[in-house]
Length: 351
Image 1 (cartoon, rainbow, N blue to C red):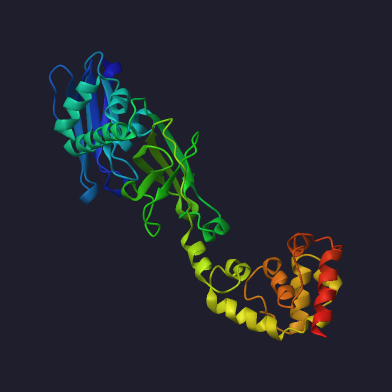
Image 2 (image 1 turned 180 degrees about the horizontal axis):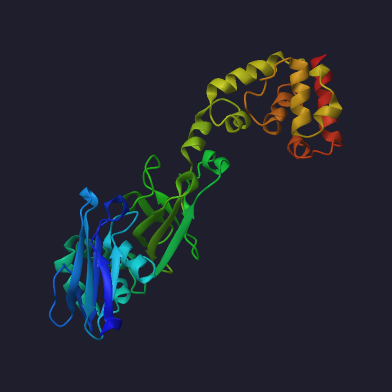
């Protein structure tokens, strides 16, 4: 009998997550509530530790032969039972009744009977998902199996964030479709995400902490063969840039800071371009920055912007055709004659 002895504590976890201990006998599921359950478990003894909110009891339990135990905590991110169940049994978060039953290794009717009594809100959410999937299939006009896909994303670098990473749609793997925020000023939570480009339904959203916003896993159910054209998407930044009369190149370089853009444009208008050395200006970022600062006498001439992104604007303002400049700016070998020639033409224009 000793092989079936276990210890379990009813203490709260971090973030006040509630613990659970499920006992499974054949196709039936039971929740341990601190007392003997005939034919399943006997409380051999227990120890109580008083510690305010963190007070708890540790139980020493004897399980009957053939009884499976599933100890766990409610979800770390969402507080939901299904998230905690996934962690307890080592599977992805179950979003449907079928998946919950599979995680518990019991039948769907058994899972339903248990959860409707023990966790009615969890059961209600699963019912809503099932109803939504039925409605989705009816709306698609065809009978077919759903495919469940997980869209994973997150932890962008600072450049990606400034480029609208958290607003931009995320591609659904395997389909010409994507998920989008309904309100780009909001976060990636279930009520604020829609499926675009295919008939689909968001089932759940899991978030894990990490750098620059952490990581997300959005589970969606889609119906293959229902793909439609994806409408154009623009970030808030792109919409602002399109509505602005300021140069796009500067709008991007200064991340939409119109005050800095105006200040930079004023500096460029006063710059004596004829004094710039074409060799230095055909080199890399550091040499270009140093040369402009030398001529302008202004150590903060670029106002924090990347010289490689704004030097072509200087030539644009000199009425020079600079279509070749972007390539030139990326060359740090100091051998780019295209930039030097453009600079010479700019000088000629200024004379």
